[in-house]
Amino acid sequence: MAATKTAAPKRPKTAAERQSRVHRILHLLDEMYPGVTCALVHRTPWELLVATILSAQCTDKRVNEVTPGLFAKYPTPQDFAAVRPEVLAQDIRSTGFFNNKAKSIVGAARKIVHEFCGQVPRSMEELLTVPGAARKTSNVVLGTAYGIASGVVVDTHVQRIARRLDLTRNTDPVKIEQDLMKIIPQENWILFSHQLIHHGRQLCVARKPKCAECKLEPVCYAKDKTV
Ligand code: SF4
Image 1 (cartoon, helix red, strand yellow):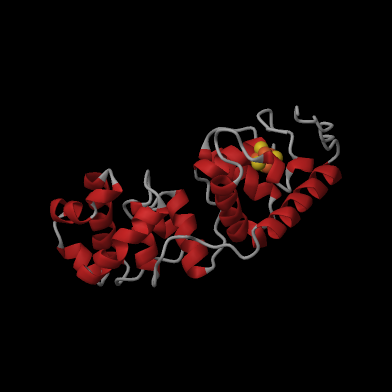
Image 2 (cartoon, rainbow, N blue to C red):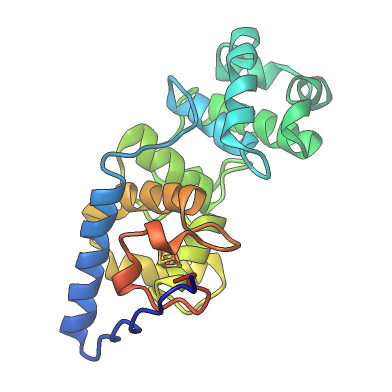
């Protein structure tokens, strides 16, 4: 039987309607993904920083397979600072792009050991000086490890879903983050980031999103909706 087309959701016209729609989206995300958090296994902010650097172009599952052995071999930032990048590269080979990742991790360790007393800094401004920590990585570390809402994590999932939900019309991650920070209350930034990342993995996938299972469908007017 052919799928029945539902009426296209009405777009908000006023600022109050737009704000109310954003609140509805947040409420629906809470229903779908209550209390979700980062899938990267870690015990300290430093371990989360390393895991986040490793997760570029790699699945969290693979990273979680590699990190227990890695942190057993190099237990502290000082251990990472003392290793040569070409040696570390062999330990993280299976995560892909291992030469660049090794350079970033060793560079980050040296910076943190020499300039931050071995502690991952707690501000965006300081974290952005650490090799391998651009805004996305810094937001993950500050939000998940320290509970500091410094911004919204904009990865490939957040980029796609924010556009599908018409929360932004930009394509540049920095501009998307600025748009989201304007309309999402700051107390929601950390959870909202995790929720969109989970949503992007589970339902709002890049090709053929599973809209029939999505509670956001009544407020979504994405062109590539599948219902
Ligand atoms: S309705 Fe479809 S396109 Fe819209 S957010 Fe849900 S899964 Fe994504």
